[in-house]
Amino acid sequence: MDMNTVILTGNLASDVELREFGEEKKLATFRLAVDRATKNDEADFFRIAAWDQQAQLCADYLAKGRKIGVEGRLRYHAWEDGDEKKSRVEVVAYRIEFLGPRSAESGAEVVPFEAAVA
Image 1 (tube, one colour):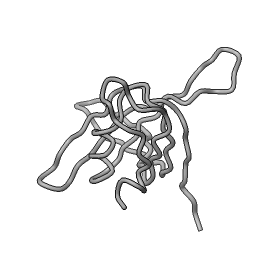
Image 2 (spheres, helix red, strand yellow):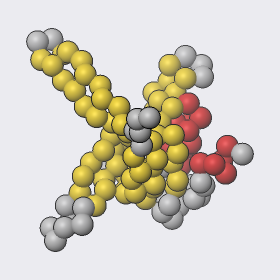
Image 3 (cartoon, one colour):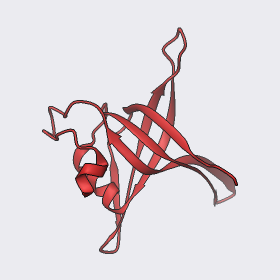
Image 4 (cartoon, one colour):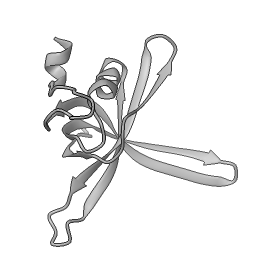
């Protein structure tokens, strides 16, 4: 059995971008900065994608700087842009935990995803 699971904890490096496809299909994307254990305080940046109800919750409650935990799977995406070939790896989230305090700007409370959909 093959496994494709990733767990990350970090801070949003961008605001959430929400796109809608029809009435019920939604996609939220954002970048997550995950600190490395180095002397230089470096970080790795990951593109996170969340779908549908989870996408809407991300758009409602998350903003740049917010600390979260993400569990998901890696997905490789390749495409051609004219003559140029492009690719990226992203994390497709199936669980997002809102960890940091609520945002002073949005007034959003800390709500674990599981509690929000229950």
